[in-house]
Picture 1 (tube, rainbow, N blue to C red):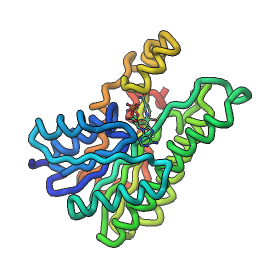
Picture 2 (picture 1 turned 90 degrees about the horizontal axis):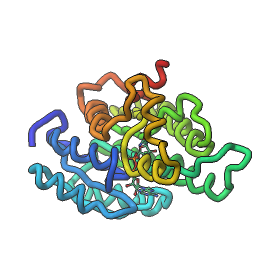
Picture 3 (picture 1 turned 120 degrees about the vertical axis):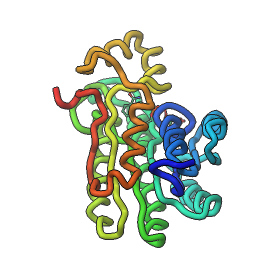
Length: 251
Ligand SMILES: NC(=O)c1ccc[n+]([C@@H]2O[C@H](COP(=O)([O-])OP(=O)(O)OC[C@H]3O[C@@H](n4cnc5c(N)ncnc54)[C@H](O)[C@@H]3O)[C@@H](O)[C@H]2O)c1
């Protein structure tokens, strides 16, 4: 396929659905060969990419497990012969409760997946990209890492941490031809927000009302920013935490 990512090899975590799936499909449509990884099955994502004429393979990973992440990166390099683009996107919502009530086990789980998981991915992707001479890493943060949300202590801490990890690494590798950015989505209709809507009826409506545009995003609206950050069109972008949020943080 031709496009702004033609000839590139991409790895996407959290690719079984939502923002990860839409981004894997968009990267493939832009010409990348894509390894889709998730703790859940990615068959549907692979089928979507293949049906659109792209190339994809899938593997199972728990990003909280560093050895599994190391194997994921090696398997991607072995399968496709390199790694140019990494979208570290896997994440969980955590429980919705105030800080004084937040359960310690859920805190540990959310930090392990949403923050330590991104660090695991970056660590092993960077080892390869340093040897290969370059690359582009995009991490999924959130508007919750930029502004206060409420009822999301572990999630907000993890997403603010992802922005810190992104900026720190951008400084470290700016002269190694490796760009590292984060996307900060506002409300997006995915399994994550639909499940929250199920347990807290009206959640998606309330999220839409908080958005200046009066609606939540489709995953594809985040994916197009990911493709741009991955591409040479963003060649002078590094260390950025880019809100893709319908104006949420501008309020
Ligand atoms: N939906 C929103 O409104 C919104 C807003 C801001 C940021 N985000 C972030 O976007 C990212 C994608 O979420 P989404 O909204 O597409 O939801 P989603 O639930 O559709 O996707 C998250 C994916 O991550 C996978 N995953 C969970 N734990 C994992 C683990 N330990 N190892 C590997 N994979 C794991 C899930 O199986 C799932 O496929 C997350 O990091 C989320 O925090 C979402």
